[in-house]
Length: 150
Image (cartoon, rainbow, N blue to C red; front, side):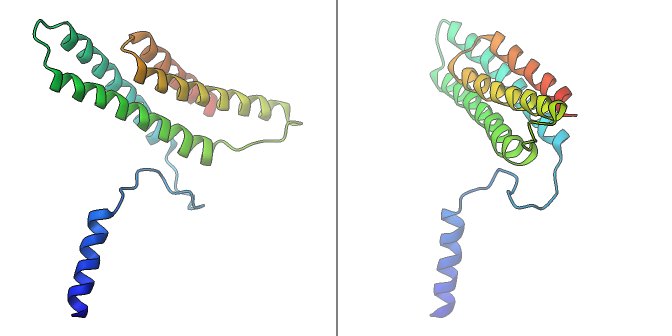
């Protein structure tokens, strides 16, 4: 009987387990900033492809709504992933507050936080539109953050 109960509990754990996507928030010291930035860039490219596909599918004479919905969902998912990396990885763990009296360090901190906040906003805007200008702005913000983060 105990074995059956243990088996049932194990199965239930697998069925109801939530996947974990974010890097841990314990002080493990294992960080790969370049990988996170590359992931954001890949998400931006995927959003761009999604936007193009949505625009193309919407212009067809006979709209395939199934594919259209899938591309919209894909675009939203990748925008969410950008927001997750920006907020949970960079803003929570990597960009540290500095003493305002250290003017150079504080200016860098403000620049980094501002760019990250703008990335969050443009990831949100990417969900709301198929305007390629949003993707270009988001891509530019990633480049600017990469330079400010060094």
